[in-house]
Image (cartoon, rainbow, N blue to C red; front, side, top):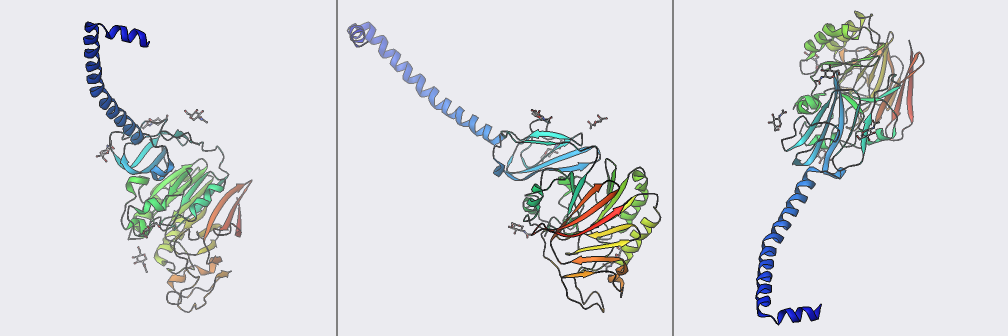
Length: 387
Ligand SMILES: *[C@@H]1O[C@H](CO)[C@@H](O)[C@H](O)[C@H]1NC(C)=O
Ligand SMILES: *[C@@H]1O[C@H](CO)[C@@H](O)[C@H](O)[C@H]1NC(C)=O
Ligand SMILES: *[C@@H]1O[C@H](CO)[C@@H](O)[C@H](O)[C@H]1NC(C)=O
Ligand SMILES: *[C@@H]1O[C@H](CO)[C@@H](O)[C@H](O)[C@H]1NC(C)=O
Ligand SMILES: *[C@@H]1O[C@H](CO)[C@@H](O)[C@H](O)[C@H]1NC(C)=O
C-alpha cells in the first residue's frame, strides 16, 4: 500500500485530484456527520418518546374499567406524550396527554404496552367464581397492591379513591391496582370535584351485567338520592334474568361507623328491595363509614366494606348514636336502635374497627363472603348465603 501511494503522489496531477477528493470528503463529512448525528438524536428521541419501556414512565395503570359494551383501558404517563396500546388502535392517538385510554369492544382484552413484552390478557370466565371489594382507599395505595396476590375474576371499588378530589391523587389512588377489570362507584370525596369523568367514563348511577351477575351502582349523597332510586326502579328490569344481583352505594343503608345511617336513604333502599322480590338481590356493598360492618335483613346482606386506606374509625360515636356510649374495636349481634343514625341496628351481625376487604365466592348453591384483615390477610369473619 505504502509504495503505491508514494508512487501516485509523485505524479502532480494525481496529487491535485487527491487534494480535491480530500476537500470534497471533508466537505461532505462536515455536512453529513452533524446531520446524521442530529437525525439519529431526533429519531432516538422520537422513539423513546413514543415507546414507553419502563413501568416508571407511567403515573399509574393500565387499569381496566368494565363497561356495558366492553372495557375501557386507561393509563397515565408522567410526560405529556402520545401513547397507545399494542394490539388496539388508540381512540385519540394524535394528542399529547398524561391520560390515555382505549375502548375495547369486548369483555376480553389482550394488549401490551409499546416497547414492553408484558402481555396483559384477560378473558371474562363463563362462570364467575370470585370477585373482591375494596373501598375508601382515600389516596393511599398501601393496600391495593395486595390484590395482585389474590385470584379473582373482577373487583369493585365502593368509592372514595380520592381524599381532596385533586387530579394528582389518581396517581396514588390507582397506583397499585391489578389490571383486572374494575367497577367503580363514586364516593363523596370523588364526587366533590367530579374529576373521574374522563377516567371511568361512567355516570353516577349505572347498571352492569357480568355473566349471570347484575350490578347496580348508585350514588345517594349530595341530594342525588331521588335520581338514584328512580334509576333503580326504572332499570330494575335489566336484572330480571340475573342469577345474583348486587347493589353498590357509597352511603351505607345501616352502619355502626361514625357517620351513622341516614334513615331517609335507608327506608328508600328497604322499599326498593321489598318491592323487587322478583330480583335475586343478594347484598348491598357500601363504604363511607371507616369500619367494617355486616347487617342482614331478611335474606339480604348489607356490608360496610372495611376501609382500604383512609383513616380508621372506632366502632363508636357517642355524639351521633345517642345513648350508645361504648368505645370498642368490635361489636356482635343485634343492637338497640335509639335514633335515626342507628336505624336498622336490630339487623346487625358484626362490626370491626379494622382495614378489611371482602371476597365473594360462588360455591355450588352457596355464596361465601369472606372478610379479610388487610394487614394480616387473616379471615376476620365469613358469611354464607344459600340460594
Ligand atoms: C383528543 O384529545 C384532544 C386533546 O386532549 C381533544 O381536544 C380532542 O377532543 C380529543 N379527540 C377525541 C376524538 O377524543
Ligand atoms: C361492538 O361489537 C358488537 C358485536 O361484535 C357490534 O355489534 C358493535 O357494533 C360493536 N361496536 C362498536 C362501537 O364497534
Ligand atoms: C395476545 O396477543 C399476543 C400478541 O399479539 C399474541 O402473541 C398472543 O398469542 C395473544 N394471547 C392470547 C391468549 O390470545
Ligand atoms: C396523596 O398522596 C400523595 C402520595 O402519598 C401525597 O403526596 C399527596 O399529598 C396526597 N394528597 C392528598 C390530597 O392527600
Ligand atoms: C339524609 O338524606 C336526605 C335525602 O338526601 C337529606 O335531605 C338529608 O340532609 C340527609 N341527612 C343527613 C343527616 O345527612
